[in-house]
Structure formats: structure tokens, C-alpha cells
Length: 305
Image 1 (tube, one colour):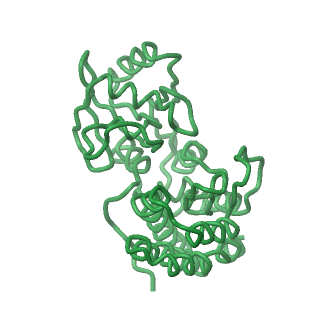
Image 2 (cartoon, one colour):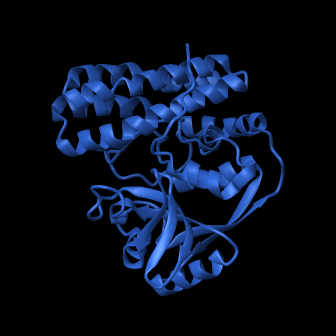
């Protein structure tokens, strides 16, 4: 039995999009589904795991998601810090601006953030003056205030492995009223494409996808799960991966993809089950769950196709 999840967590861009779309926003469950984030697994360079598709980044899913939702936006990229700040000030005359990726480590209102560590994030900026930025941070910080220098350092995003510095989206415009069920169905071809690992992905040597990624991560954990890998998994990757697939199962069931929903729900259970053994050091149990996860990606693709 699959029981849908509702709660807080690392859904920064889905929540930021929902804020920008306002009263016409679909649920964050459907927004996340439309980005195709649940459909695959990758281990970048053979060492950095994510429970999202091989070669996928958040930016890779944004335009397709907005199109499926019936919306458009304008992407603006500053040439340098001064140009970016000037464009942000101009954009804010029309309303809040969607910002990202940013380096989370510069967001010093978040406890424990003292400097960059390569973590991407998305925000909605509301106001800016000569000293501070007022923003909504989907990580659980409404109306957070951040010194302008820290915000600009975060927005420079020089430690983020994808995207470009000083990127924002403005002028969100609703082009069509699309019911959530139609959004889900319109997103299925993209889900299949990502699960198939089709296309030319500019990935570092040693990168793994789907079944090989799950098997590879199991081997990494068995060989000695260091603090960096363990911290990445228990503080971010497992939490967001399990939620994405739980939401995918909910969406697929709504759209009548019963077998695909069953498989996605099983994936969510397996990924969610990693949290306790990884926190407590029971690495053999975590590795076994990953090996059980490995063959499910081909099954999900077949069920969707």
C-alpha cells in the first residue's frame, strides 16, 4: 500500500516555483513530477550519488516542467555582480524574483552554514536595498534577511557544478489552464526519456546511471562509507530521493499507471529505508537495500513505456 507523503523537506525549486505561480500553482507534488527528477539514479564521477536521472540537473527539467504546467518565464543572467544586481532591482519593481542556483553555504541565517560546500539551492527574493536582501527560503525560512554581500556571494554560485552565475527567472506568465492530471500525463514521455538515459550527457569519467549507480553506491558504502558520503546521503540525498519517488507514485496512480505507481512506491520505500542504517552505521543493510533497488529502474521504464 502506498500512502502519500506531505511535509517539509529539500524541495527548494518546487516550492519556489509554487510561490512564483501563486494562486494558480499546482501542488508541489505535481511540480516536482513534471521536472522528471524522480526518474533515475546517478553517481557522478563514480563517487557522488543522487537519486535523480543520469545527467539530470534541476535546470535541465525546468523549461519542460513549466511548459507542461502551462507557464513560461524569462531567464535573466547577469554579466557580472553589478549587472546582476541592477537587473534584480529592475525585476523587483514588477514583483518577486526566482533566484538560483545559489551556494547554500553562504546563506548564513541557516544554522551551521559558515561557507561554501557545493550545495545548490533556490530562493525567491522579495526586496533588496544597499545593505540587505529580504527573501523567502523554501528550506523553512520565510522573510529571511541576508546581508547583500553574502547574497551576492551565494548567487555567484562558483562552487555549483551546473548552471551559470547570477541566474534568475522573472515574468512568470500563465499561457494555459492545465489540470494537474493533464500535467502528469504530459510529463510521462520526459520521464521515459530520462529513465532510458537517452541523449548526450556531459558527465565526468566513471559516472554511473540507474542499475549500475545503485550497485556502485552499494559497493562504495561497503568499501567504507566516509563522513562526507554519509553526510551527503543522510542529510540530503536519501530524504529528497524518497520523497520524489513517493510523489511520483502518487502522481502515477492518479493518472492510471497502476503498475508504474507500484514500482515507484517500492523504490521510495527502499530509498527511505536507507536512512536508519546509514545514520546508525549498519552499512551492510544499506548496501542490501541498494542492490534490491538496482533492477527496479528498468521495470519502471517498461511499466511507463
